[in-house]
Amino acid sequence: MKELVEYMAKLLVDNPDEVEVAEVNATRSVIFELRVAREDMGRVIGKRGRVANAMRSLLRVAAAKEGKRAILEIV
Amino acid sequence: MEGKRRSVEASGGSVDEAVEKALEELGVDKDQVETEVLAEGSRGLLGLGREKAKVRVTLLEPGEPREELEEFEEPAPARADVAEVALEVLRNLLHHMGVQAEVVVREPAGDESLPIVLDVEGDNLGILIGRQGETLRDLQYISRLIVSRKLQRWVNVVVDVGGYKRRRERILTELAERMAKRVMDEGRAVTLEPMPAHERRIVHMALRDYESVRTESTGEGGRRKVVILPKEES
Image (cartoon, rainbow over all chains, first blue to last red; front, side):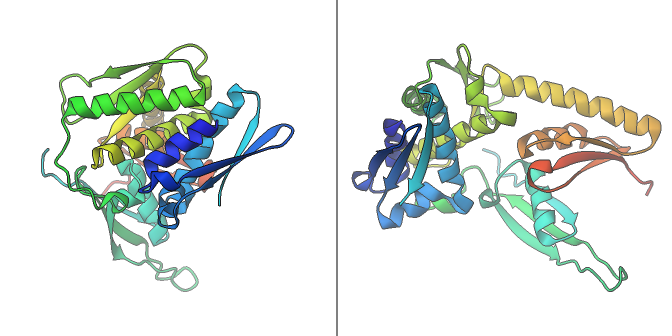
């Protein structure tokens, strides 16, 4: 799941070296905190949050494959 | 690529509503078009002097930079390169999602202007389609964004899962034609079940050349649906 978030984020931003994904595990869900360079925020969020929501949708598939629930936060 | 610009005029209760209608017909997002307001429209007073809002929405050339990709100035990539990059990106996405599947490239027969289709094949892939095809729409969106960034150019690729879209398009086209016939026979409007934007578009397109019926969308958000109406004599 983490690799998926990293893969997508790194290819969507101008500064892939500044992409960081932190994983916070709870009992049945996992929270991924995605950090990108300030000027790349728009690229991972998109207009009306469209990019972020599409990434969440694919993350949901990856999580379901492992029987979990995943949350993506852009911080 | 032909230098033809597609534009659509639409009207509605408000400018936003009119724009949404036009986008639906073109099947694109707001950031892929230029919008021109032809009439602001007004609610009028006590229902008097009410006027519809009217807009003209023009599709930017496929090669015209969209706002997010405006710094891209590379020449159009060859089709084979688009296919290769798209295939790699989609395979990586699926791999990272933990989905076991094969991806095959389908060239639309005989028409170079149609986008390449990447069809994902395998067992139990319903999870990639999602409710009303929403997950598939997101998979296609992320794939397109990544491929476009890699090629430094906005490219159009279609992602399908086991021919789902093709099948859905056939079913919806047949439904639209059957319902249009009913509207013509009975002379009154028929409302279809709620559908997502890309499916409503298939219905609008299927009936756009009909002389005795017209289509419009009503309702908000997830409840938006297509209505097929008899066209008034003019």
